[in-house]
Amino acid sequence: MANVRVERTDDGGFRATNDRGAEVRIGGGDEDGVFTPVELLLAAAGGCNIVTVEPLTAQRGHRLVRLAMTVQAEKVESNKLGPVTITYDVELPSEEADKVYRAVAGRVHEKYCTVGRTLEEGTEVRLELP
Image (cartoon, rainbow, N blue to C red; front, side):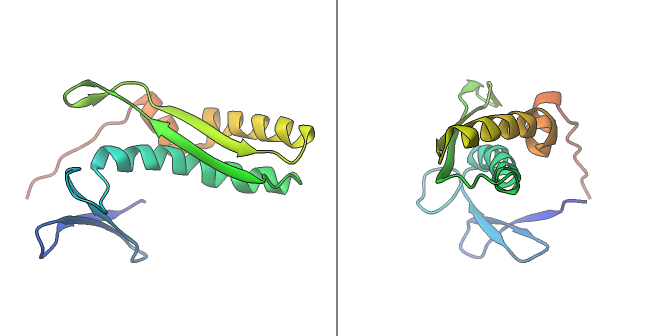
């Protein structure tokens, strides 16, 4: 089970903390050094892809020279995003690496990225109030 605690901090900001002690500062977008909740969603979609593509490509003998991505979405309503677009930025060591990278990235996107699949298929979000 995935578990994250989100809480208000003593300075009036917010943070998300996981069970391993990592934390991310969250805000409304008007302060430096914080992610908005929408940015965290985009980071999760991109992160899910990239942390899976990297080892699978390397396991097939092709370490990419550069592997990065940009993840974008526009609001289509005040409280809803339109399509999320993931654009890779890679430098490939060879044509063979290009073939492997494309095959792996496609499979990861279609089958293995939990975040992307959840966004595409939709998932119920439940609210429990004490």
